[in-house]
Image (tube, rainbow over all chains, first blue to last red; front, side, top):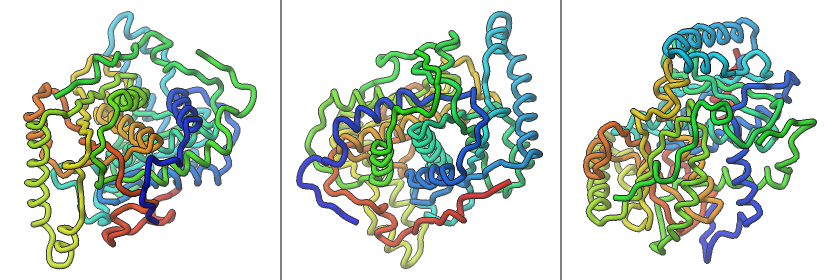
Length: 218
Length: 218
């Protein structure tokens, strides 16, 4: 479907843009979830929308695994505990105390666990656009994750991305093909509370950077 | 700012969610741009919103470089031409003919060129969340890119992600610190036309995948 434009697009108005800005600002990495179950149809619709993210060569390399069995959920939680204990050891003194006090995942309570992989050997897309930048395959999966995250937030759901995990162990426990790379492990559910500021700002771990620190000209 | 929730969030209503779905569906990888200049304040506001994307340990590793000089723009275009000619050689017969006919970038016409990097040695975030998955740093930058892409689309702007480039050559020509990794090179401008279907579907390169091909259970 094509639409030749005569002027600026009117599809999205100022009110929508303002709400979209709110959506981006109020999206959070959620670690405190209610246990209420989430309608499977809603989860399916979020994945469907995420699959309209951009992908290199239109290869759609995302593979979404709903982690539902008690054994698989326990294995992931175990992997987090191990990786987190090891990470804590790398900090010293006050920073270690601070690290240990942070709540870094909501695996226990989140009703939905979603592991998102990149299929590294997909034939889709015929390799277009990734000969000099093969990492584009995994980047495409991240674009889908961020799309899902925003869509979930618009539904009043929270998402938490858990990266303190052992990717190879998780792949083995979930018995996915060896050619899949774990890109993201997501907890999804209703958040206990909402915040405008990132949890790690609120707890004094890391401040926001200024425009001067991130924008340059050449 | 905290808001303790009593029920489902009412911040985003059904009308917003419908428009957000349209935004995701009508976002395209644009390769045909008008040459009209874009207000620098608008570009700045897009980058500002993108910088509210999630980042591992809140490390905000994104570095946005506005590529404005004729010399830098020419170097990027030259890198594309070289990488694209090499990519074309990897295809045979009908697929090569098809590849050559595809328009894969809009570097010549797009008024804004934005190179997006990951600062691999940032101290922000204190390494939190990326000890077992160091790639999270670059993934955070991709989340910012997808946020900027959607925000641009809501403003009637098109974005094209050019990955047929030699990343090391581009880094050298743009004289960025050696510790920065090129994650994305974006063309931004007003699109000549709008499409609901991806360019690579429309031109018979790659079809969309079905839900059965991307959703699994464990």
